[in-house]
Length: 168
Image (cartoon, rainbow, N blue to C red):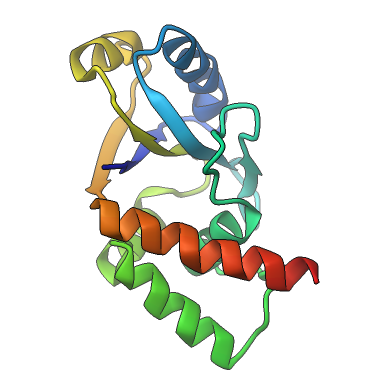
């Protein structure tokens, strides 16, 4: 079973700093990263900057369509490469099917404001006490949404199809 976690940091650079910690934890096999992305929202910026962490993503990575859709819903960022209109409703429904619902979107929108950053991670097999210990002192707020195996498979199915359509 995979877990979607979101770590919010009180600075625009905090998530980028945490990326090194996450890489080290994965190298030590204390967590298995399936996919990850960073949102950095500099103070005074009109919108946040997003970046998929391809160097951390496993073979089952969800890809840019997933992160584009998620961040588009949260921050109202235009969704490059994705159909606008009826397709948005279908994809929004698909996000709900995989455990990312309106309350999650709303909470992320409220939490991630200018001057902050966040690290979004889809992971499994975490040695929780060691992961928690590694992040001590990094001043973060953890938001967690557990995904069942069925939800994880649905997520891969929805966004694998979307990636194929977007690149065609």
